[in-house]
Length: 179
Ligand code: S3P
Image 1 (tube, rainbow, N blue to C red):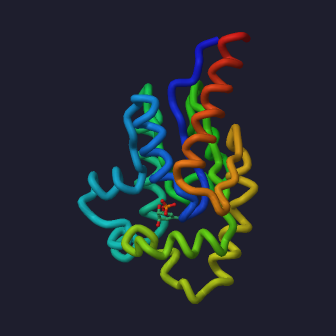
Image 2 (cartoon, rainbow, N blue to C red; image 1 turned 180 degrees about the horizontal axis):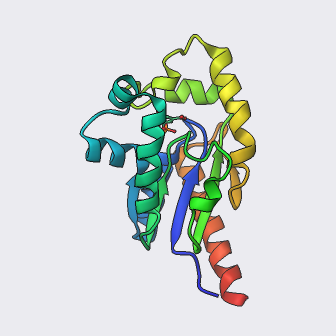
């Protein structure tokens, strides 16, 4: 069997997908893509501007198309946006030889970490609307759980999580080699 040559990070806002993804890419020598940043680069709008001008539905359409394009590339680490894998059927958009990892984070810590970058996260605005964010977190978890592996990031540093993701990638590669 051919080993995976793509790593896809999924999980809620504030899970650390971008920070961890960038470091994993440095270690593997693969190219790093942050889905939100790619969307902003291509549309020349911030995520907030897209949400405000065109609505969430339009954003999801752009997100789906850009993700599909990035996922067609070999030797890449992709940090998806929190909503991309928070839906049924995301695995259908994932090509073979892609290792997906769910960076899991509890809602309290997610809110603490995620409210920092407000232009990327219009859905976190309502830091006060805790119930809405909790609901989103709960509804999405079963979909994130469809990833090949789960890494708990609660209370861990970016370095720790990076090391654990790299270990799983190596284990996965070893397993495929012996199959
Ligand atoms: C979203 C998460 C954001 C961004 C957009 C919508 C979501 O990405 O794509 O604000 O629906 O959870 P991060 O998970 O990188 O914050």
